[in-house]
Image (cartoon, rainbow, N blue to C red; front, side, top):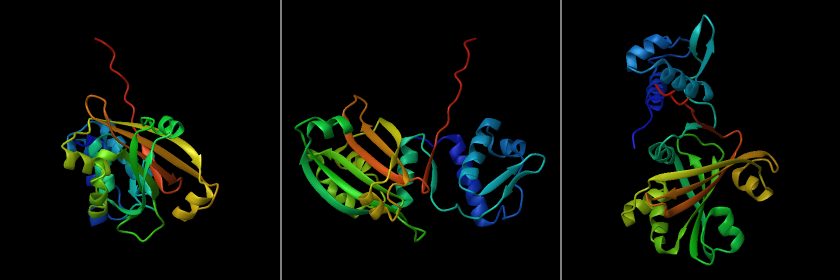
Length: 245
């Protein structure tokens, strides 16, 4: 799937800032100039700049413009996830470190919480993810659940720490992810989770449950991820429906 236009623009601007094309202290081109440069709408440009703002790369002031404040993002991640490709790119920027794997039969409570089939056999790969470029605290804890029939991807997950496990299932079994259903809610970090993530017990966090489905609705995998609140921001965009002519 193709990346959204504003994501492409944001990534190019970030690359320009990192390379010194737009040095710290300088102003980015105006919105109208960026519209002409990338051949996109002003709405798209604003969405791209909002991504830079959320990562601490730029600041904005009326009658001044958009000023470059840093050459690299502040600690943590701010991600716009609009497509499966965006999600795969996020995995590429982080390193999965598998902590343990368990095989289990889904009980009623686990099945209800994760959308699994009760009494079916599954496996769970538990990992932390770290930034490959910066020696910082773990970004998140992720549990990935899939049916026992897909157990061959466990070894592949060890061999390819920068690929989504659902993506490995796609490649190995000839499946296709058509839809990712995403549920987001606020949580408090348990003592055990805080210890694994080098965070404070009881601190706020963000839990994201994703269901990876094929076109016919069949469930391929489920991921349950917990981020400390200061290490990840999920950016979404809503667009008003056009009124009928």
